Length: 268
Ligand SMILES: Nc1ncnc2c1ncn2[C@@H]1O[C@H](COP(=O)(O)OP(=O)(O)O)[C@@H](O)[C@H]1O
Ligand SMILES: [Mg+2]
Image (cartoon, rainbow, N blue to C red; front, side):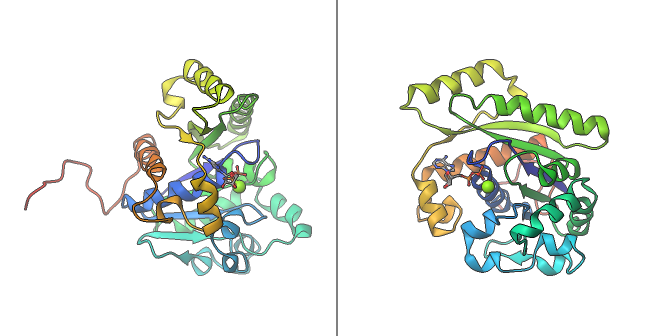
């Protein structure tokens, strides 16, 4: 099983949106996918359903009170499950963060899910505190959204430096790329950031596809669904995640027992 942590120093840049929509895209493409929420504020749970945030989850697994298998929530999409963050009160956040910071416990949670899934997508809180450090140590790969707004570029250097420091100490995720997010093609400042990014970045560090700023994301968050499930036909922007997922499947060398990688015949 490969594991993909979605991380960035800054909050509100689209991590949770990317985690949810990307994991949904992977599941639709046939990869057995588990979305793991590590944000004590329960970002995934809150955006999907209030009942998810009341369930046992990752924090309870880490505390030895349940197992990841028991805490998994299956979805209506075949092969797509969610491991909510569980019950972490504000006063318990520091303890949870310290418990997962060295990556060992997250790695054993990932190991316990490895036979059931092809991919784990791990959403993280903002900043490079213990939780994100633990996830960056435990996961095989990392992706980071860059908000297409001035000063956002600093977050790129921060992530690369963090991964480098962790790698020097032991294990660290490989950076599989940055995704330009909230791109506003009608806004000159946003476009200028995009131009800078396109110019500066080696192609293997940047995805060809960017996530545009679109009101549909707020609608989807309010409705508690991935954008692809908001309505039929799915909003066009939902397909951005299909493109990113297929590019990532190649970069991660993702395998699925259900999919063959050669051409499939059109006719019987
Ligand atoms: N591409 C986008 N266009 C418009 N709104 C977005 C976009 N991506 C995310 N949002 C909205 O911005 C807010 C923050 O996004 P979120 O994914 O929660 O960020 P993070 O997890 O990095 O804090 C949410 O309300 C979300 O609906
Ligand atoms: Mg979030």
